[in-house]
Amino acid sequence: MAEFPDFTFASNEEIADTLGRRLKAIRLQQGLRQVDLAASAGVAPATLKALENQGNCTLASLIQVARALGLEGDLQALFLPQPVRSIAAMEEQAQPARKRAPTKRAPSRPPAKLQPASRTTP
Image (cartoon, rainbow, N blue to C red; front, side):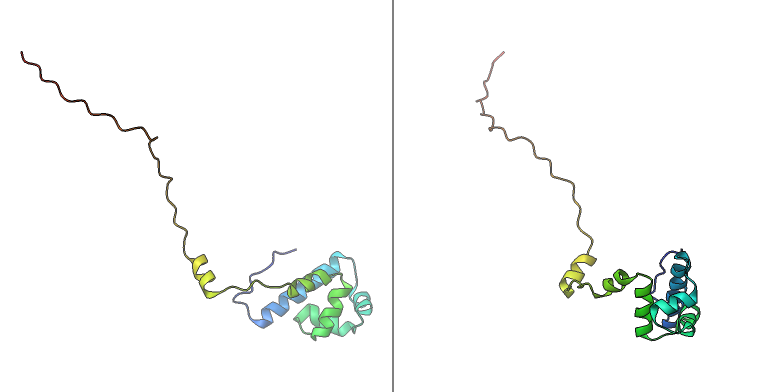
C-alpha cells in the first residue's frame, strides 16, 4: 500500500480521492467484493463505487464503510484530545536551543603562600 500522503497543500478533492483509493485497497486486501462490503456496511453498491472511484459520499456512508472494514480505531484517532499550545510555547519551540560546551574548571587548590624573596650577594 502507498505511503500516507502529506495533505498540507492538497485540495479537498485530492484528499477525498486518496481516501477512496485507500478504502478500495483495504477492501481488496481483505478479499471483499464491492457488493459484499456494501451489503455489510448497509450502503448501496453505487455509493461504495462512488466513494472508491471519486471519493464522493456522505459522512454517514463513510463511517458505515469504515466500520464494516474494521477501521473504527482510525476514526477514533480523530477524536483524541489535542494538546493546547500557547503562542509562547510555540515561539519557544521555534527557537533553537543554545548549545554550549561544559565549562572545565580546575580543581580548587588552596592559594600558594608567598615566600619573601631572599637576596643573595655574590
